[in-house]
Length: 388
Ligand SMILES: NC(=O)c1ccc[n+]([C@@H]2O[C@H](COP(=O)([O-])OP(=O)(O)OC[C@H]3O[C@@H](n4cnc5c(N)ncnc54)[C@H](O)[C@@H]3O)[C@@H](O)[C@H]2O)c1
Image 1: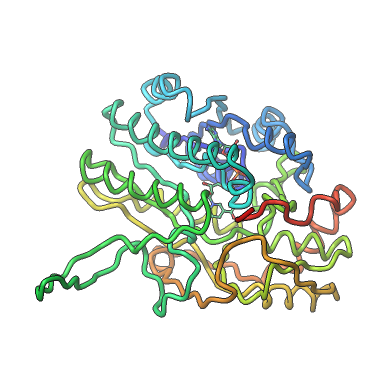
Image 2: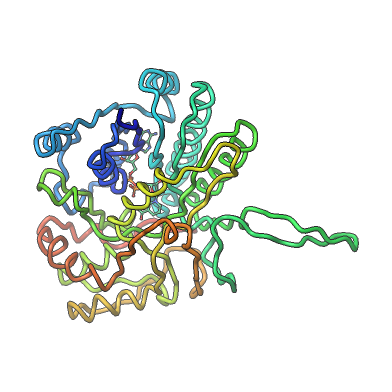
């Protein structure tokens, strides 16, 4: 029998292509999503640059193309615990992949309403998932999407390890060796929820022996994967606005419409990146390599390269002749930082890294250029500020 997997947040940017990838690989996939991301588009008067289809249309097209059925359940996991638990008891999944959080740092910093929403939603979803796994009594492997941002964007002076750090602590003249979670250093309310998630995982793994993999993902770039390219109705989201647009995709779209590439502050900020196709690859690899019973939380850094923002803008400008413009940084962050990250865990299980040089031009030409007429230029600049 095919392995059953729930994809929480499977209508979103990372969740949708991952659900298709897993379905293609033979998993019996159920998407659970409350469609809140589509509702936030309405609140922000902004849409994906790509014309994404409603979830029922997406799934019927997938079935028509592949013969594979993906079930969809409209559940708010933060608010409908009993319904979610009932579904787990009914379907008895082998694994749950958890993407279902409010994932924009700028949106989380917009105002007290969005701060409270982000904390309430993200922490409740994560805790409800953990509590439901315990309530079900099933041995379910949980794979969660965290972020590289839990480590902070300062200069660590070392290559950031995958979750854990061996340290010597000194007090009262006594030294002790111990292993700790790499110190959390969140840079926004959104990132804070991810560091709190990590503590919840630590606790449930210790207390209830849950098998958990936490993936600290870099900024995702690109739009389509092997599966979403199969038909226009399967096209993935492409966010370009000041709140949800991640930096590289924002630059690509700006280049396509002839808008200057807007760098916040100096551009010396270094970030970690991964292509959307590699996101789906990593989830598949994480599912194939679960922690054993009794193993601590497995933490993988899910990133394939690091770049400064000015470097990125330079690469795109070289390809497209786009102008580069520095604007005031709405964020509170270091003007520049060095960032090196270990990613051996994924390389050791066979991740084939897609690098910027392999896919950048294709993204500019095939996606940003193709849909540029759908762009609303008034949504490009940032409106959310870290401090009033
Ligand atoms: N996009 C990136 O660059 C990136 C980088 C690092 C980590 N991540 C992480 O990956 C995950 C997915 O990110 P994304 O870019 O796909 O975000 P997204 O907003 O496109 O998708 C999240 C999905 O979760 C759903 N959701 C949110 N709250 C829910 C709830 N209470 N109940 C049910 N469904 C709910 C939304 O409707 C949406 O479809 C997030 O946890 C994010 O933190 C993303």
